[in-house]
Length: 52
Image (cartoon, rainbow, N blue to C red; front, side, top):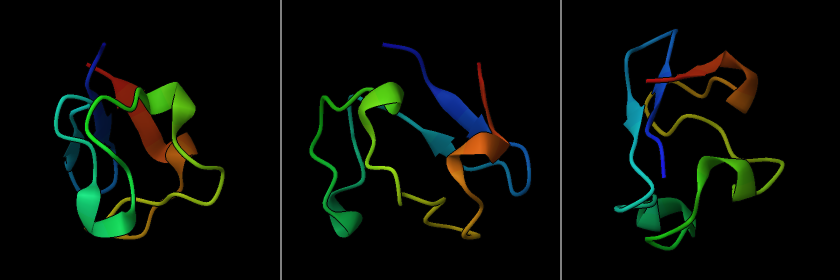
């Protein structure tokens, strides 16, 4: 599973870690994030992320 970087603030979404503070379990791929998920650092939508 690939990591994705927020182009607004530089936050890295790592699917191995997930985003447990916002209800996303470890092992959740970027493509399977909930529709309303936003960057936990700056609030940018998923469209503002790029694969790294």
